[in-house]
Image (cartoon, rainbow, N blue to C red):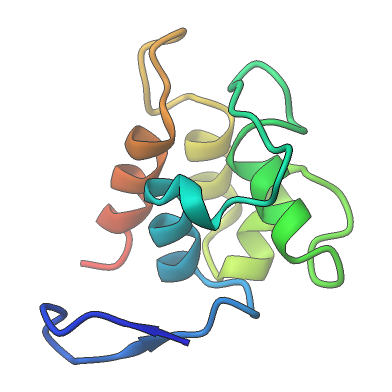
Length: 107
């Protein structure tokens, strides 16, 4: 579990289960990434979907948008737009940009 005193609700993040908030947090903190995971948005194995798959393989069998979206509780359209880059200018997509888009869904 992970908590931060600055969070409004003083909630805990359970890193063992997929969630929108947890994926967003992990995308911003590379020290929480699995060893040997490298970011490359051009590959499903190395973007946010690949990271989610590596973190929670029992919940996310394949690193594809609808499986990751379902596991973290977002719509198919939102998952498609975020994880396939429709929400960003191409070739400038960083883990933080994906996290920012995920955060917009929680407010």
